[in-house]
Amino acid sequence: MEIARDLCRKLGYYNLNPNTISWKEKMGIRRLPADHFMILRGEVQLSSRAMGQLTPEEWRPMIASGLIYYKTLTRNSLVGMLTTMFPIALLVPAVLLVSFKYLEGSILTYPIVLALIVLTFLAGTRFLMYPKRLWFKADVEAARILGKESLVESLRKIDQLDPNRTGKRGSLARPSPSERVENLARTDKRLDTR
Image (cartoon, rainbow, N blue to C red; front, side, top):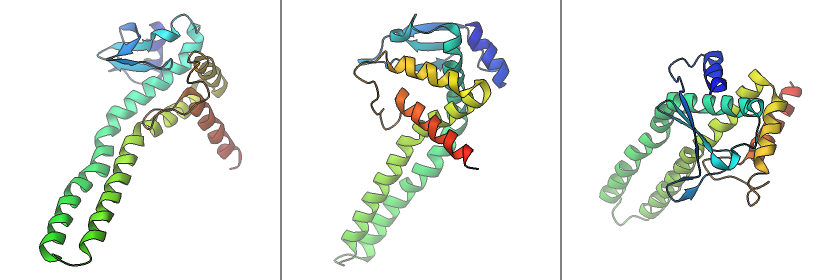
């Protein structure tokens, strides 16, 4: 608990003020991945699969990354939603209405509808991938603050706790520990070439 409070102070997140840590096995019917991290009303939630598997110092970069992620998510989620889905929600019905009213019987109606379906799909995918990009950014920031090696080692150790998931891809919205390590390696290479 002290690590989370110390990191909140170090990162300037004074309003988060975590006061408890809980270990969760499932969220609803879904089993939580070993790298699960959530902060909700002052409670830091971690996966029970990782309980006792990492030392407090190995938890430090994982908690830092999670805190950065949640702080960034809450700050940017409205902006991300407004810039991605709101224009689509306004554009699609308007274009459909115009195309059916003014292009009735025209050959252009179907390409316009198809283009809108594709546009909606692409915007939805971008919106769903937004949290994944935030995890990658949070990892880079945590690595910059606490050191890349400690975060990479913790991620690799956690990756081994999910034998069915080791080395595999995460979901559209959440990267796996191995994807997070790969992203840190790519980021490191880009920084080296500058």
